[in-house]
Length: 300
Image (cartoon, rainbow, N blue to C red; front, side, top):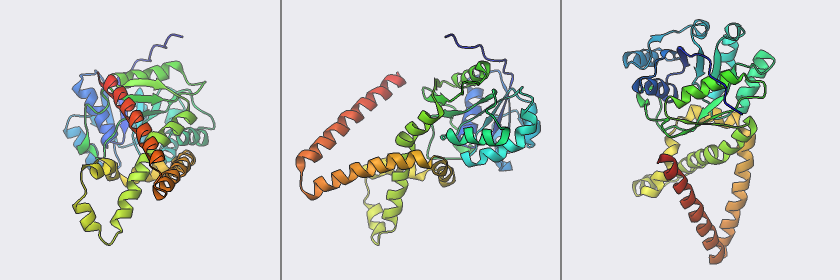
């Protein structure tokens, strides 16, 4: 099946000019993509700074006006804010001339928000998720290379307008991303295992050690392994609070499986079962080496 031609995109709107939204805008600027970019942010100073830095052409605070003036509108805000945003945008979006997409790492909640607000899944809604990020946040963290050679997952439904999907695909390809299509449920399952669980473990480990009476000595002598493993615990707590509440079922499922496996490792250690430990470590090393090769191939 051939891909549909994207609808003409002349003007892009971005709601939320933090790391993800501002990086998208700055990448479009750096690559010279001929788009007029309008933006807004709940923090007025962030929008004004994005304007001063040249990431966007204009700040448009009123969401209905912003929506009415753009061909594609990107919601780059925490996932639990999307229902309220959709509610504000509903009167303008009903005309069907603006393609709506988002950047959240949970797609089931986006689908449910759309059903709650619109009563159906609009043909012009194309949920999306760039698999890229950083432990830093805010417009100051904007990185125009953030999406280069990274994947973006789109989760259109059966009735989604192919031209709308093509438009969002085209947008992300302009900043160097590789776009993949996936179902909503499969996306949330995969991200629970590969992103959400690692963040949960990092947050929990740092919080646990921070409550130890010897915490200052522990952190003082922590080396590279601890720093590498816990880097993502420096991520935005509000954003991750929203992600976990929005994808609780899939995350609990993978967390339960992990805890079962961890109990096996604990039992092997308690019983000094070197064979089991060696098996776990060897399999993990082979799997990690394979993952590293995949990353190297993608980067190449």
